[in-house]
Amino acid sequence: MSSEKYKEATREAMRAELDVMMGGLQAWRDAHPEASLDEIANQVTPRRQALIGKVVAALARQHGDGVEVAGIACEVCGEALVYKGRPRREIGHLEGKIELRRAYYYCPHCQGGVFPPGSAAEVGGSSLDT
Image 1 (cartoon, helix red, strand yellow):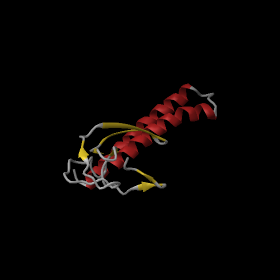
Image 2: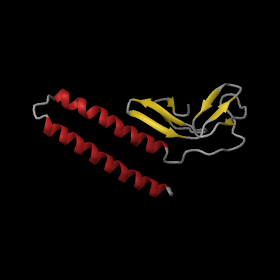
Image 3: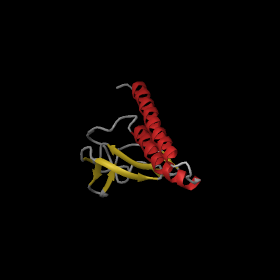
Image 4: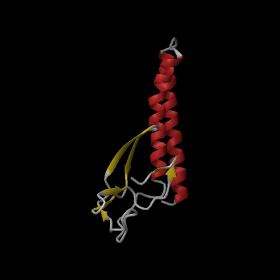
């Protein structure tokens, strides 16, 4: 799938998810007309986190899920990385749980993993590689 088709499909999927979330919240609110603001927020927060977690995961997959590539070197020690497959990984994040299946490489020398290799993306000074 091309990058533009992936982006549009992702936008459509997120719109559908938002519609489902809002429908559920509106139905809950109809059933709880006396709910306090805190009670409403307690209903919104986990659903928002789940939705935003899906957005974060979709953005992480936007450029693919990685592939087996020979000859990739560890950025720390320069030794060859070993491809370990594409395991499913669940990541706890402030924006919700994120589930990814991405290429994973391991450095036998440093004993560190890289998931996925070679990403230079950083947010707030924290590397997204490991």
